[in-house]
Length: 168
Ligand code: AIR
Image (cartoon, rainbow, N blue to C red):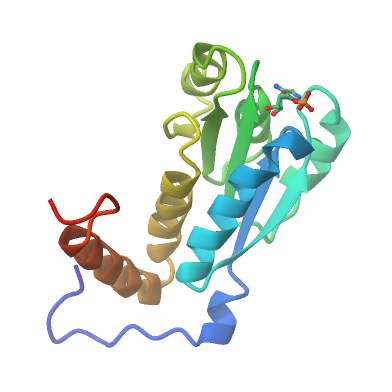
């Protein structure tokens, strides 16, 4: 909540477009979930880059992407043995949001993302919860870009009035 009477948060649209979220998916077959993230972030004026980079099939690419100093938040998604969020978290101290995808039995990817060892956290959302990942990324970015905080407040207020399944 913004302090009453405090300075008006202001960030020109053009600058918000420079805010960088990197979305990594383990396979091209996961791209529909990356598009859900892109769509939700776009509602807040935040852009993202999407990359197909598997922790097991393209570890060098994962390595290169995590070294990009301009990325502020990572969202990593994979199904089956979903090592990708953890592999990203192992290489950066910037926030990593992990989305386990329900491609096998579900528990496989869920536990792979949630059960990180001490010292290497991943902020795990639910199975296939791409939209929550986008919202969480926006909340993290809002700590640095106050204009996003206002947008989040408006989004939440609207959501209370019109929940996705219709009025309660
Ligand atoms: N995957 C790819 N490399 C490592 C893992 N865990 C995951 C992908 C995808 C699933 O394996 O994230 O959800 C199946 O990939 P594909 O390419 O066979 O469709």
